[in-house]
Length: 369
Image (cartoon, rainbow, N blue to C red; front, side, top):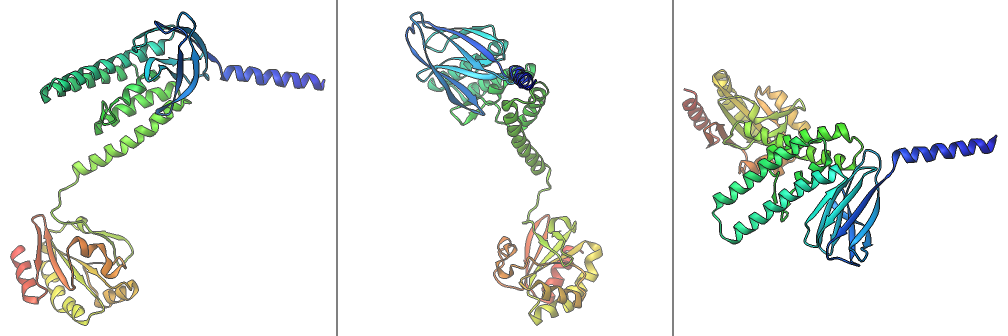
Protein backbone atom coordinates (compact mmCIF):
# COMPACT_ATOMS: atom_id res chain seq x y z
CA UNK A 1 0.00 0.00 0.00
CA UNK A 2 2.85 2.31 0.92
CA UNK A 3 4.61 1.67 -2.41
CA UNK A 4 1.38 2.40 -4.25
CA UNK A 5 1.13 5.83 -2.59
CA UNK A 6 4.72 6.65 -3.51
CA UNK A 7 4.08 5.61 -7.13
CA UNK A 8 0.88 7.68 -7.24
CA UNK A 9 2.70 10.75 -5.90
CA UNK A 10 5.48 10.33 -8.45
CA UNK A 11 2.97 10.04 -11.27
CA UNK A 12 1.16 13.17 -10.01
CA UNK A 13 4.37 15.21 -9.93
CA UNK A 14 5.32 13.93 -13.39
CA UNK A 15 1.92 14.93 -14.73
CA UNK A 16 2.17 18.36 -13.08
CA UNK A 17 5.60 18.89 -14.62
CA UNK A 18 4.29 17.92 -18.03
CA UNK A 19 1.49 20.44 -17.71
CA UNK A 20 3.77 23.25 -16.63
CA UNK A 21 6.77 22.59 -18.88
CA UNK A 22 7.29 21.45 -22.42
CA UNK A 23 9.33 21.70 -25.58
CA UNK A 24 9.30 23.61 -28.81
CA UNK A 25 11.04 22.20 -31.83
CA UNK A 26 13.38 24.00 -34.19
CA UNK A 27 14.28 22.62 -37.63
CA UNK A 28 16.71 25.01 -39.30
CA UNK A 29 18.57 24.86 -42.60
CA UNK A 30 21.20 27.45 -43.48
CA UNK A 31 22.19 27.70 -47.14
CA UNK A 32 25.91 27.49 -47.86
CA UNK A 33 26.69 26.55 -44.26
CA UNK A 34 27.59 22.85 -44.16
CA UNK A 35 29.23 21.62 -41.00
CA UNK A 36 29.02 25.13 -39.55
CA UNK A 37 29.13 26.08 -35.87
CA UNK A 38 26.14 28.18 -34.84
CA UNK A 39 25.12 29.80 -31.56
CA UNK A 40 21.62 29.77 -30.13
CA UNK A 41 20.81 32.72 -27.91
CA UNK A 42 17.83 33.35 -25.67
CA UNK A 43 16.38 36.66 -24.51
CA UNK A 44 16.95 37.27 -20.81
CA UNK A 45 15.04 40.39 -19.85
CA UNK A 46 16.22 42.92 -22.42
CA UNK A 47 19.59 41.30 -23.27
CA UNK A 48 20.46 38.02 -24.99
CA UNK A 49 22.42 35.21 -23.38
CA UNK A 50 23.94 32.10 -24.98
CA UNK A 51 21.56 29.16 -24.83
CA UNK A 52 23.65 26.54 -26.63
CA UNK A 53 25.98 25.87 -29.55
CA UNK A 54 25.01 23.59 -32.44
CA UNK A 55 26.63 22.23 -35.58
CA UNK A 56 24.93 21.87 -38.93
CA UNK A 57 25.18 18.70 -41.01
CA UNK A 58 26.47 18.41 -44.56
CA UNK A 59 23.26 20.06 -45.82
CA UNK A 60 23.49 22.98 -43.38
CA UNK A 61 20.65 21.58 -41.26
CA UNK A 62 20.21 21.13 -37.52
CA UNK A 63 17.35 20.38 -35.17
CA UNK A 64 16.94 21.47 -31.60
CA UNK A 65 14.48 21.29 -28.70
CA UNK A 66 13.86 24.40 -26.59
CA UNK A 67 12.41 24.24 -23.08
CA UNK A 68 9.24 26.32 -23.03
CA UNK A 69 6.96 26.57 -20.01
CA UNK A 70 3.23 26.77 -20.56
CA UNK A 71 2.13 30.37 -21.06
CA UNK A 72 5.74 31.54 -21.33
CA UNK A 73 6.83 31.72 -24.98
CA UNK A 74 10.58 32.12 -25.44
CA UNK A 75 12.60 34.40 -27.71
CA UNK A 76 15.38 32.39 -29.39
CA UNK A 77 17.92 33.66 -31.92
CA UNK A 78 20.22 31.80 -34.32
CA UNK A 79 23.66 33.34 -34.86
CA UNK A 80 26.60 32.59 -37.11
CA UNK A 81 29.43 34.66 -35.71
CA UNK A 82 28.07 38.19 -35.23
CA UNK A 83 25.32 37.76 -37.83
CA UNK A 84 21.82 37.01 -36.64
CA UNK A 85 20.38 34.44 -39.01
CA UNK A 86 16.87 34.13 -37.55
CA UNK A 87 14.65 35.45 -34.75
CA UNK A 88 12.07 33.14 -33.21
CA UNK A 89 9.24 33.34 -30.69
CA UNK A 90 8.44 29.77 -29.70
CA UNK A 91 5.33 28.49 -27.96
CA UNK A 92 5.11 25.16 -26.18
CA UNK A 93 4.42 22.36 -28.67
CA UNK A 94 5.36 24.32 -31.79
CA UNK A 95 7.83 23.16 -34.42
CA UNK A 96 9.39 26.07 -36.24
CA UNK A 97 10.89 25.34 -39.66
CA UNK A 98 13.49 27.91 -40.74
CA UNK A 99 15.14 28.40 -44.12
CA UNK A 100 17.99 30.91 -43.81
CA UNK A 101 21.15 32.15 -45.47
CA UNK A 102 24.35 33.49 -43.94
CA UNK A 103 23.39 37.13 -44.60
CA UNK A 104 20.49 37.20 -42.18
CA UNK A 105 17.66 36.55 -44.63
CA UNK A 106 15.24 33.81 -43.59
CA UNK A 107 11.74 32.37 -43.84
CA UNK A 108 9.88 30.66 -41.01
CA UNK A 109 6.81 28.46 -40.80
CA UNK A 110 5.10 26.41 -38.12
CA UNK A 111 5.27 29.18 -35.50
CA UNK A 112 2.75 32.02 -35.61
CA UNK A 113 4.65 34.15 -33.10
CA UNK A 114 7.91 33.72 -35.03
CA UNK A 115 6.26 34.76 -38.29
CA UNK A 116 4.88 37.90 -36.63
CA UNK A 117 8.25 38.59 -35.00
CA UNK A 118 9.85 38.43 -38.45
CA UNK A 119 7.49 41.15 -39.72
CA UNK A 120 8.69 43.56 -37.06
CA UNK A 121 12.30 42.50 -37.56
CA UNK A 122 12.12 43.03 -41.33
CA UNK A 123 10.50 46.46 -40.93
CA UNK A 124 13.24 47.65 -38.59
CA UNK A 125 16.03 46.31 -40.80
CA UNK A 126 14.56 48.09 -43.82
CA UNK A 127 14.27 51.33 -41.85
CA UNK A 128 17.85 51.07 -40.55
CA UNK A 129 19.23 50.38 -44.04
CA UNK A 130 17.38 53.37 -45.54
CA UNK A 131 18.49 55.67 -42.74
CA UNK A 132 22.12 54.60 -43.16
CA UNK A 133 21.95 55.19 -46.91
CA UNK A 134 20.34 58.62 -46.52
CA UNK A 135 22.90 59.69 -43.92
CA UNK A 136 25.75 58.49 -46.13
CA UNK A 137 24.35 60.36 -49.15
CA UNK A 138 23.89 63.60 -47.19
CA UNK A 139 20.09 63.67 -47.32
CA UNK A 140 18.23 66.73 -46.05
CA UNK A 141 17.11 66.64 -42.40
CA UNK A 142 13.48 66.94 -43.50
CA UNK A 143 13.77 63.74 -45.56
CA UNK A 144 15.40 61.86 -42.68
CA UNK A 145 12.73 63.10 -40.28
CA UNK A 146 10.00 61.93 -42.67
CA UNK A 147 11.60 58.48 -42.82
CA UNK A 148 11.52 58.28 -39.01
CA UNK A 149 7.91 59.49 -38.79
CA UNK A 150 6.78 56.95 -41.39
CA UNK A 151 8.54 54.12 -39.53
CA UNK A 152 7.17 55.30 -36.20
CA UNK A 153 3.60 55.32 -37.49
CA UNK A 154 4.06 51.89 -39.01
CA UNK A 155 5.46 50.60 -35.70
CA UNK A 156 2.56 52.07 -33.69
CA UNK A 157 0.10 50.37 -36.03
CA UNK A 158 1.98 47.08 -35.67
CA UNK A 159 2.19 47.02 -31.85
CA UNK A 160 -1.40 48.16 -31.29
CA UNK A 161 -2.73 45.80 -33.93
CA UNK A 162 -0.91 42.82 -32.41
CA UNK A 163 -1.00 43.84 -28.76
CA UNK A 164 -1.75 40.31 -27.54
CA UNK A 165 1.43 38.85 -29.03
CA UNK A 166 4.83 38.98 -27.38
CA UNK A 167 6.24 39.62 -30.86
CA UNK A 168 5.57 43.34 -30.37
CA UNK A 169 7.99 43.66 -27.43
CA UNK A 170 11.19 43.92 -29.53
CA UNK A 171 9.50 46.62 -31.62
CA UNK A 172 8.83 48.67 -28.49
CA UNK A 173 12.53 48.47 -27.62
CA UNK A 174 13.86 49.28 -31.12
CA UNK A 175 16.94 51.48 -30.88
CA UNK A 176 19.45 52.46 -33.56
CA UNK A 177 22.95 52.70 -32.16
CA UNK A 178 21.66 52.90 -28.60
CA UNK A 179 20.63 56.54 -28.94
CA UNK A 180 17.85 56.60 -31.56
CA UNK A 181 14.86 54.73 -30.11
CA UNK A 182 11.75 54.37 -32.22
CA UNK A 183 9.61 54.90 -29.13
CA UNK A 184 11.60 57.64 -27.40
CA UNK A 185 8.87 60.21 -26.80
CA UNK A 186 7.46 60.92 -23.35
CA UNK A 187 3.92 60.32 -24.61
CA UNK A 188 4.90 56.84 -25.78
CA UNK A 189 4.28 55.76 -22.19
CA UNK A 190 0.60 55.58 -23.17
CA UNK A 191 1.38 53.08 -25.94
CA UNK A 192 3.55 51.03 -23.58
CA UNK A 193 0.75 50.86 -21.00
CA UNK A 194 -1.87 49.86 -23.55
CA UNK A 195 0.28 47.05 -24.93
CA UNK A 196 1.51 45.93 -21.51
CA UNK A 197 -2.03 45.59 -20.16
CA UNK A 198 -3.07 43.58 -23.23
CA UNK A 199 -0.12 41.21 -22.88
CA UNK A 200 -0.69 40.86 -19.15
CA UNK A 201 -4.19 39.56 -19.83
CA UNK A 202 -2.75 36.79 -22.04
CA UNK A 203 0.65 36.07 -20.47
CA UNK A 204 0.38 37.07 -16.78
CA UNK A 205 3.35 34.87 -15.82
CA UNK A 206 5.69 35.88 -18.63
CA UNK A 207 9.05 37.27 -17.50
CA UNK A 208 9.07 39.41 -20.62
CA UNK A 209 5.76 41.02 -19.71
CA UNK A 210 6.96 41.63 -16.15
CA UNK A 211 10.05 43.38 -17.52
CA UNK A 212 7.86 45.41 -19.88
CA UNK A 213 5.64 46.41 -16.97
CA UNK A 214 8.66 47.76 -15.09
CA UNK A 215 9.78 49.76 -18.11
CA UNK A 216 6.22 51.03 -18.59
CA UNK A 217 6.08 52.20 -14.96
CA UNK A 218 9.37 54.09 -15.45
CA UNK A 219 8.04 55.78 -18.58
CA UNK A 220 4.78 56.67 -16.83
CA UNK A 221 6.73 58.43 -14.08
CA UNK A 222 8.49 60.54 -16.72
CA UNK A 223 5.17 61.18 -18.45
CA UNK A 224 3.50 62.33 -15.23
CA UNK A 225 6.48 64.51 -14.30
CA UNK A 226 6.47 66.12 -17.73
CA UNK A 227 2.73 66.73 -17.43
CA UNK A 228 3.12 68.41 -14.04
CA UNK A 229 5.96 70.58 -15.32
CA UNK A 230 4.05 71.61 -18.44
CA UNK A 231 0.97 72.63 -16.44
CA UNK A 232 2.80 74.21 -13.50
CA UNK A 233 2.49 78.00 -13.23
CA UNK A 234 5.58 79.91 -14.25
CA UNK A 235 7.51 81.61 -11.43
CA UNK A 236 10.02 84.40 -11.70
CA UNK A 237 11.56 83.60 -8.30
CA UNK A 238 12.95 80.48 -6.56
CA UNK A 239 10.48 78.39 -4.64
CA UNK A 240 11.00 77.91 -0.89
CA UNK A 241 9.55 75.00 1.08
CA UNK A 242 10.47 75.17 4.76
CA UNK A 243 9.08 74.06 8.15
CA UNK A 244 6.81 76.62 9.83
CA UNK A 245 6.23 77.15 13.56
CA UNK A 246 3.48 74.52 13.60
CA UNK A 247 5.83 71.93 12.06
CA UNK A 248 4.03 71.88 8.73
CA UNK A 249 5.74 72.75 5.47
CA UNK A 250 5.06 76.26 4.19
CA UNK A 251 5.47 76.85 0.46
CA UNK A 252 6.30 80.36 -0.67
CA UNK A 253 4.58 79.78 -3.99
CA UNK A 254 1.32 78.66 -2.36
CA UNK A 255 0.72 81.89 -0.42
CA UNK A 256 -1.23 83.39 -3.30
CA UNK A 257 -0.24 86.97 -2.49
CA UNK A 258 0.26 89.72 -5.05
CA UNK A 259 3.49 90.70 -3.32
CA UNK A 260 5.47 88.83 -0.69
CA UNK A 261 8.26 90.20 1.47
CA UNK A 262 10.84 87.46 2.01
CA UNK A 263 12.54 88.56 5.23
CA UNK A 264 15.79 86.88 6.24
CA UNK A 265 16.51 87.54 9.89
CA UNK A 266 18.09 86.25 13.11
CA UNK A 267 15.73 86.17 16.08
CA UNK A 268 18.72 86.34 18.44
CA UNK A 269 19.40 89.92 17.31
CA UNK A 270 17.54 92.63 19.22
CA UNK A 271 17.50 95.02 16.23
CA UNK A 272 15.79 92.38 14.10
CA UNK A 273 13.08 91.87 16.69
CA UNK A 274 12.56 95.61 16.95
CA UNK A 275 12.23 95.80 13.15
CA UNK A 276 9.46 93.20 13.37
CA UNK A 277 7.43 95.24 15.83
CA UNK A 278 8.09 98.79 14.64
CA UNK A 279 8.17 98.31 10.86
CA UNK A 280 6.88 94.98 9.58
CA UNK A 281 3.84 94.64 11.86
CA UNK A 282 2.35 98.04 10.97
CA UNK A 283 3.03 97.47 7.26
CA UNK A 284 1.48 93.99 7.42
CA UNK A 285 -1.64 95.29 9.20
CA UNK A 286 -2.07 98.05 6.62
CA UNK A 287 -1.45 96.09 3.43
CA UNK A 288 -2.21 92.41 4.12
CA UNK A 289 -5.84 92.75 3.07
CA UNK A 290 -4.68 94.35 -0.18
CA UNK A 291 -2.44 91.47 -1.21
CA UNK A 292 0.71 91.60 0.92
CA UNK A 293 2.25 88.59 2.65
CA UNK A 294 5.46 88.15 4.62
CA UNK A 295 7.56 84.98 4.51
CA UNK A 296 10.10 85.32 7.32
CA UNK A 297 13.13 82.99 7.24
CA UNK A 298 15.09 82.75 10.48
CA UNK A 299 18.75 81.66 10.47
CA UNK A 300 18.79 80.68 14.14
CA UNK A 301 19.70 76.95 14.27
CA UNK A 302 17.92 76.71 17.64
CA UNK A 303 14.39 76.20 16.41
CA UNK A 304 12.94 76.04 19.90
CA UNK A 305 14.30 79.47 20.81
CA UNK A 306 13.12 80.86 17.46
CA UNK A 307 9.59 79.52 17.98
CA UNK A 308 9.41 81.19 21.42
CA UNK A 309 10.37 84.57 19.89
CA UNK A 310 7.75 84.23 17.13
CA UNK A 311 5.05 83.44 19.67
CA UNK A 312 6.09 86.10 22.16
CA UNK A 313 6.08 88.77 19.42
CA UNK A 314 2.80 87.41 18.04
CA UNK A 315 4.05 87.62 14.47
CA UNK A 316 1.00 87.04 12.24
CA UNK A 317 2.79 86.18 8.98
CA UNK A 318 4.44 82.98 7.78
CA UNK A 319 7.50 82.17 9.88
CA UNK A 320 9.86 79.37 8.79
CA UNK A 321 13.14 77.85 9.91
CA UNK A 322 14.91 74.73 8.59
CA UNK A 323 17.33 74.59 11.53
CA UNK A 324 20.39 74.83 9.28
CA UNK A 325 21.37 78.32 10.32
CA UNK A 326 23.59 80.14 7.82
CA UNK A 327 23.94 76.87 5.87
CA UNK A 328 20.28 77.07 4.83
CA UNK A 329 19.76 76.54 1.11
CA UNK A 330 17.29 79.43 1.13
CA UNK A 331 20.17 81.90 1.53
CA UNK A 332 21.93 80.49 -1.53
CA UNK A 333 18.77 80.51 -3.63
CA UNK A 334 18.20 84.20 -2.93
CA UNK A 335 21.90 85.16 -2.93
CA UNK A 336 21.72 86.46 0.65
CA UNK A 337 25.13 86.91 2.28
CA UNK A 338 24.14 88.92 5.34
CA UNK A 339 21.03 89.27 7.49
CA UNK A 340 18.76 91.07 7.85
CA UNK A 341 17.72 91.17 4.20
CA UNK A 342 14.40 91.82 2.49
CA UNK A 343 13.33 90.88 -1.01
CA UNK A 344 9.91 91.57 -2.49
CA UNK A 345 8.75 88.86 -4.89
CA UNK A 346 5.86 88.87 -7.33
CA UNK A 347 4.98 87.65 -10.80
CA UNK A 348 7.19 90.44 -12.12
CA UNK A 349 10.33 89.12 -10.41
CA UNK A 350 12.47 89.88 -7.35
CA UNK A 351 13.27 93.30 -5.91
CA UNK A 352 15.80 93.84 -3.14
CA UNK A 353 14.70 96.43 -0.57
CA UNK A 354 17.01 98.11 1.97
CA UNK A 355 16.18 97.02 5.51
CA UNK A 356 15.06 100.48 6.57
CA UNK A 357 11.63 101.56 7.74
CA UNK A 358 11.12 104.28 5.14
CA UNK A 359 12.40 102.18 2.22
CA UNK A 360 10.13 99.21 2.99
CA UNK A 361 7.07 101.40 3.51
CA UNK A 362 7.75 103.27 0.27
CA UNK A 363 8.22 100.20 -1.93
CA UNK A 364 5.24 98.31 -0.51
CA UNK A 365 3.08 101.41 -0.84
CA UNK A 366 4.03 101.89 -4.50
CA UNK A 367 3.38 98.23 -5.29
CA UNK A 368 -0.04 98.14 -3.65
CA UNK A 369 -1.27 101.68 -4.29
